[in-house]
Length: 117
Image (cartoon, rainbow, N blue to C red; front, side, top):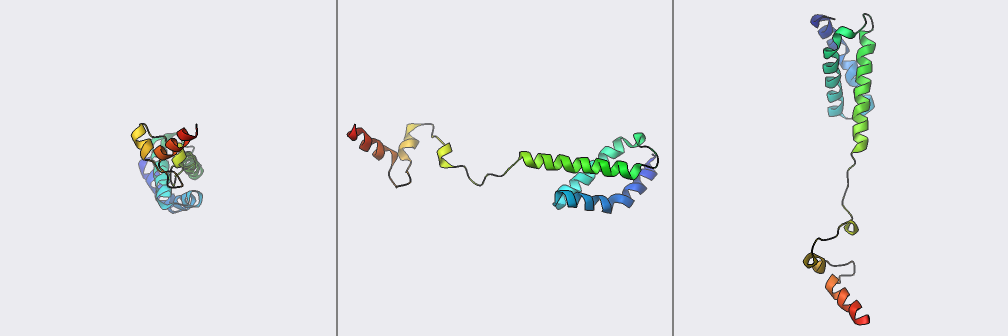
């Protein structure tokens, strides 16, 4: 496929490709990125496309790009906040300054429990 044919095909299919990207990804920026990646990959491999199957070939590349984006999204998940129980201060000065859920300092609790023993 030559450059002029490729350009014509892309201009013709671009709105539909964006709609497919949006339907799969639900985010404007991700859909645009997927279409752009698709076109870059298609340009690099334009000589391998079978005549008459250009549209299906481009759409398959796009769907694969959208799936890649979705897989990458699954690997990342936002964490609202890190639970305090998961954090252990590295030195005792910080540990002693920490306050528990009842408002007692760690050092006061340790004093209390040492008197019990």
